Length: 404
Image 1 (tube, one colour):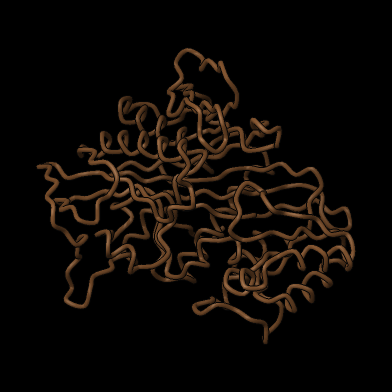
Image 2 (cartoon, rainbow, N blue to C red; image 1 turned 90 degrees about the horizontal axis):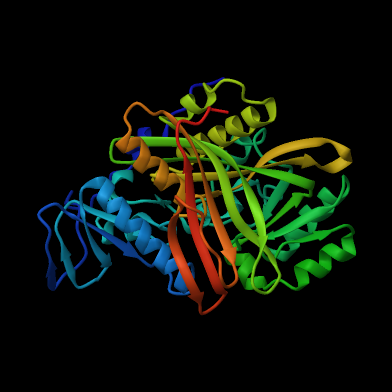
């Protein structure tokens, strides 16, 4: 296997000074001081990841990250505030440009819990597949080499930025079997549909806004039957790096819809190489980790300016076209996410127990009234969200776990 770097090696790519060479902080008028530096949350988009429970969870995580880094928590970022360095930012989403990062004083992966991309589309599912032909529409900054680099790490599919290209790509995929049509900005499988015929494909695409496809794209991908989904990820906070693998669980929300219900993870101290060094990994899991690593390395190589302190890749495995067993990265996340509760309890435990190198941790999202978190749980939200209703979110840790 080719040499693959941990996310900490991205630091050499990620300085984003202004024209004078300085690393500016936000424009300021009111002073917020801390002799140790400050940690703040930041809402990238008031319409995204900003429900009651998401804001409360982000605050809880930011307070704990501040403690890990020896900083003070200073609340939500105030554009009129002066924040003494070091400033550590916990954003709601991946930062969509180096300019946004500069405005927040973010120069490297050590300045935030999340990631920075050079173009907004890089943070979406759209980068996972190639476009439908040499003349197909594509956004500015599109890497023509990325699809080739990840061809053995993803499912068969195309990304399209026009209805015409999407129809062509979908028909080509339909020759082998059903096609999954995926809006690139939706999360948790929302908005996805499966087309089994050209007419069904046209119906799916007709319901999608042409301007949305033109600006953000749509993914067309071979459909897997009853797939298992692995999560493979890594976080770096200060000098500590934790890598992990695990599986997601589904649950029913207050409306009865099937939604994300949590993750069960095995986390190790160190980089992806330590994850692969774990004994007894089954071949399917080892393949999932390897595919996630290769995808991650391709992003670093093909999209200069990318860096992240928190990465998570969903790898699906199941029966695809022509009844062939398939495995591939579905999408990436470079922001605080559903597994972050487990990531944080592992970081906290490893910091308190230097001799420990492997733990098991789980995150849980339970809907409804009267939910009681089990003993030892670390609750990061419990209340009635104005959008989704009663919800309890917590994490559990099992220290000194066997590495498999």
